Image (cartoon, rainbow, N blue to C red; front, side):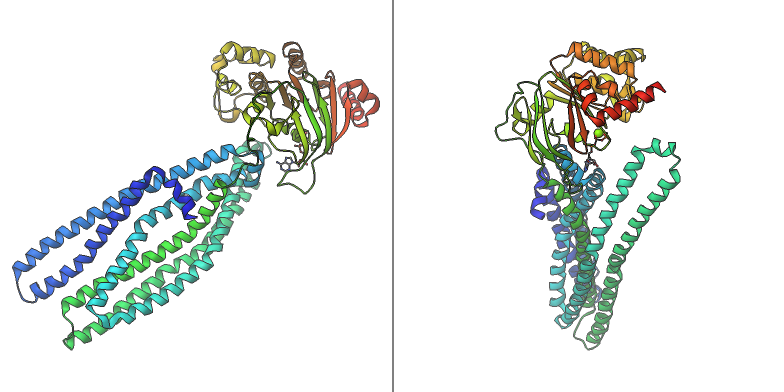
Length: 575
Ligand SMILES: Nc1ncnc2c1ncn2[C@@H]1O[C@H](COP(=O)(O)OP(=O)(O)OP(=O)(O)O)[C@@H](O)[C@H]1O
Ligand SMILES: [Mg+2]
């Protein structure tokens, strides 16, 4: 795991190395100080040599200053290295997520990805900083001070041995019990983020249905669970500190008692006892730091695992080895296609679909909600891969195309579409970066968006607020259609994209399609029969199976589902 993460240190190797070097300087100086102190007491104070005291005092000042400088530099380099490391990690994760297929994103959930990109990375960053600062400092200090202690007073070595065993046991318990608790805590964080995200994305709906109370309650419940799990985890961690203190003062007490006896017996000098105290403190402090690092690493191990999970995830949709770079025409063939969502139920949502659509045809798709209309069309630009059978575009399996080429030729207006912050023109240019204003205007005319855009004071430079909140539902849909048209695709798919557009505008859009882009294959998913009745063919889907395929007249004659929908909508219109 460490090896895999270490790659992301990248250009911050220098700082990562300098930090422990600086800390080593600090530690050496800190270890020298008590030695000098012992000399001052034994050879200066006890003998009454003021000159010696002053000389050594100055020397100690210099040593202390070097130690300070080492500590400060180490802090600086550690900060640079750890923030740089986390930046690299975030960057890698973000690029990875951009490569994810819809199926990958379904697997992690948006909220899960957000926690991993924020809280988890922060944890790992803190752990990394600790490692390069403390993981060098503490063992270094421990060995030096322990060596000095044993040299000064070998008779007390058993005390350290007892302390070490006691601390090791306590720490082992904290870590083994704490790890699963932290794991559970992070899982709950994902859920909390999910709840927040869902609420904020749908805050208008929440208000419209006066569900604020319910939502607040739901949030409290989730955040309460985070609190409980954090307490359960932290309860173990806080034991660390009292156990350390107990050991530390216990050792000091025993050493004082033994030391006093030795001094009285004349086996030890006062100076030696003084420096023995300082070294003991240093030994125990470094033990405390080591235990803190272990706890911190326990917490961050969970985070590191979660980060690596994302970084090591292979996109379920990959470009083929020798991709085909050209789509010949806009014909579409579904050959015995079955499909199931990997995260969903163990059931195919598309079953043995066989459909052949000629280039340039207009095909309407009708079916009840949940009849897999969206699923059907998402297979064409390869947003998902089929589970069985194959989908061909221009006579070639979609899996053989270069993905960018395919998606540029198959333009899709998704059912859940979004605009991004920026001007209307910026948004339209998502379809084609190099489109001129004229081309953009033409696409908007086809999509019947031009008339309302021109009524805005800023026209095509009107700013779209985040998510397109300042345009109406129907306006947004027409902008999305214009954006898709700007790609000048061979296949255009509208997934329920005129549901919020009135019938006469809807008809105008279809008329414009017929006259202006006759060679583009058009797939139109709609709820209204009127949106599809003039299509060349209409596909009726029912529970993931093809229920009928034909013209409006043919289906009226021999397809029950189609006839029912038609009668129902006609009756509704007459009433
Ligand atoms: N990302 C997903 N993960 C798992 N199951 C899904 C996913 N998306 C859709 N489904 C399931 O697949 C089935 C078909 O859904 P689909 O969205 O294709 O229906 P639809 O005909 O487009 O419905 P609507 O008219 O409401 O848009 C449904 O049962 C749905 O629960
Ligand atoms: Mg749908």
